[in-house]
Length: 125
Image (tube, rainbow, N blue to C red; front, side, top):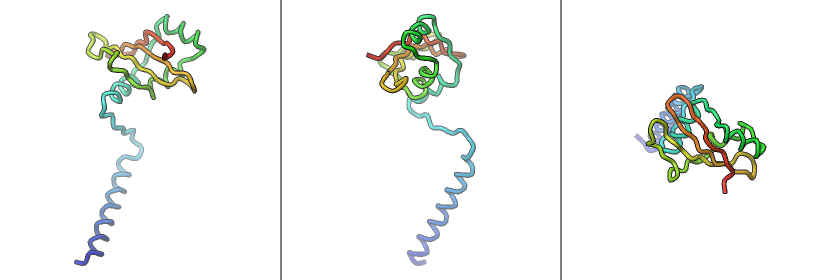
């Protein structure tokens, strides 16, 4: 079998495989959260959250709403150095990220089994 035929068979099989994969994964919300930060943020975003009184007052002072918190929780970074992931009964995390252009927030939250409790919201120094 000539080299040109081998390349043709390879490309044909490869393209069929891509089509089959596209068919199986289309319409599904597949994601890969392999790293610890991605797993923590994915876990936090699957739960509902409540704000402490202190966090609500901070949001009012900063003239922000829950959209900013949602953005930080979705696109933010977890600081594991200042977090306590093995704390019982609820792990405590420090998440920081951009709330809106030019303004970064730091969230301190408790990630419990059923919900997330945001204890503190402050601007990132």
